[in-house]
Length: 225
Ligand SMILES: [Zn+2]
Image (cartoon, rainbow, N blue to C red; front, side, top):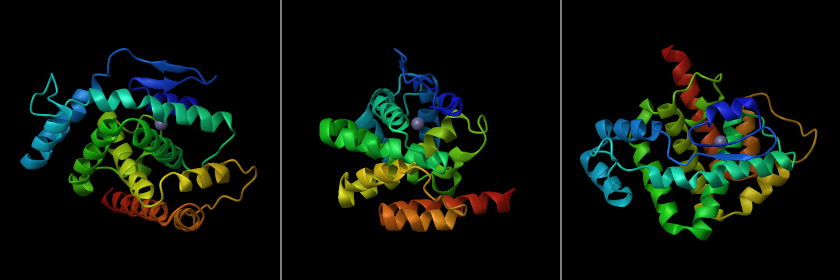
């Protein structure tokens, strides 16, 4: 677990360098900001559906209550700890995050279907924010560059991608990915498109598509800058 990771994920659950999990007793205030962000931008029908599934946020009653989602993220953090302790390495930070989100989706699918529905409805709804929402690759930007709301949106983009992998092939690609990440001295592609090809070939085609979307978003950002 790197200091980078701690800082970026220090919303409420994070792991320390020596592998201890730190869990807040109250969801971080930033979740209310995410709820407000969604409430002011999503189509009314989508918002109604989110509120039906999640309940109402207590600070912004128009938005969904994301406490339930926040509570499930411990599975994401445990996945980071397990991957780190097993010596797994990922060539991009967003890939380490995508892997942890894959683990989260798997755990919820196997143990907490209402929790999976909460994460899934949120990830689907965030897709409607369109190009304004950052893709997962945004998590590779220098620490501190991403505020909590874009960070959550980037995680939701990754979550949609890995949910598609899970829907196609359950947890088998995750096991392949874990094994691949544990190979010491593996050649790691420098270019994003090569990375995408490798993921598509060795893990799952949907993961290659996720990498391509990240690449496309980064290119658009660079053009806009
Ligand atoms: Zn993480």
